Length: 398
Image 1 (cartoon, one colour):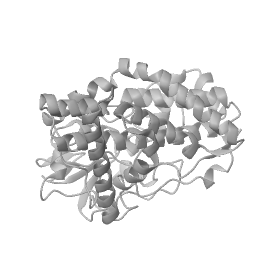
Image 2 (cartoon, one colour; image 1 turned 90 degrees about the horizontal axis):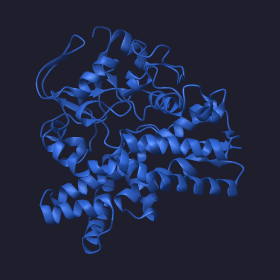
Image 3 (spheres, helix red, strand yellow; image 1 turned 45 degrees about the horizontal axis):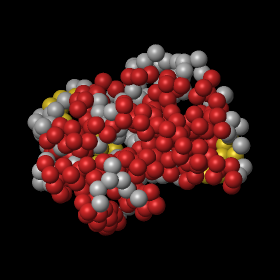
C-alpha cells in the first residue's frame, strides 16, 4: 500500500503488557502489509480480525506449502515437515484423529484433579520459600510442563532440558540458525531414545499409543511419531506457560487483583476467555503460503507468498471488540477471540489449555489472596524474538 515500506517482522514490542503499537496503524491504514521475515524472505502481514479469520480458514493459505522446496521461510529453520503444523487435509486430518481422543472434554476432566493437585503442591513450595517468588519459574512453567509430561509419558525431570530446546525451536530472531538446528537435533535424539523405551516398556500415555499405532497398525511412520511428539511437547507447555504468566500479570493490575477470577459478575469462564483475548501468545499464527493468487482486503497476493495472520492484532480490532485495550470480561463478544485459531487447524489442546489456565488462576486466587506484584509493572520484561511470547520473570509477593 502506498506510503508503507516493507516492515521488519516481528514488529517491535516495547511493553510486556501491550501488543506492538504498530498494529493499530496497520489495521487503520494498511491491513495487508508487506514485511521482511526473519529469514530475509518477503511476506504479507494481515492485521484485521475478519481478514485474519479468512487466512486461518481458507485452504488457499496452506501450511503444507511452507515446507516445500522454493517456499518462502519464516526463519532459517522451519518447522518439521509431516507434523500437525506443516500439513493440510487430508493428511492433517489423519494425524489429528490419532491424538484427538487425548484432548476431548472427558479426557480433560479426568486430568483436572491431577492438575489441581500439582498446582497446590507448587503453591506449597512458593509458601515455603516466601513471601516473594518469581511466579514464572515457580508456577507458570512447571505446571503445564507436568501436564504435557503426564500426557505424553515424558520424564518430568527433563523439563529444563526440553524447555531450552523448545525456546530455540520457537525462535524468530533470538537464536542463530545453528542454535535452532542443534536444538531440533537434540530434541529428536531425546525423543528417539524415549520412543525406543516405550516400545520395550509401553505405558498408559500418548507416546506409547503413538508407538503402538506405528508398530501394530502401520498408521504412522517412525518420523511421524517423532514429529508428532516434538510438536505436542513444544506447543503443549510453551503456550500455556506463556498465557498463565501474562494472565496473572493482567489480573494483578486489575482493581480486584487475583480475586477478580472469582468475584467478577461475568463469572470465571468469561474472565478466562477475556484473558485469552487480552494476552495473545504471539504476534502472529504459524506461517501460511498461498497455493494460488488470491486477494485479501483489496490487496492482491501472488501464489507462493508467505502470509502471517496476526491473531495478536485481531484481538485488538475495535470493529469486533469495542475498547479493545480494556480488560473487560463482561464484553458480550468475548468468545469470538481467535486465541486458539480458527478452521481445521483450531488448537487441538484448547480444552486442556482452558482447564490448565482456570485451575492455575483459581488455586492462586484461593491460596494466595494477597498476591501482588513485587515490582512496578513497567519493570516487567517480555522475551523478544520468539514465536511464543512469555515473560522473563514475574516477581510477586503476598
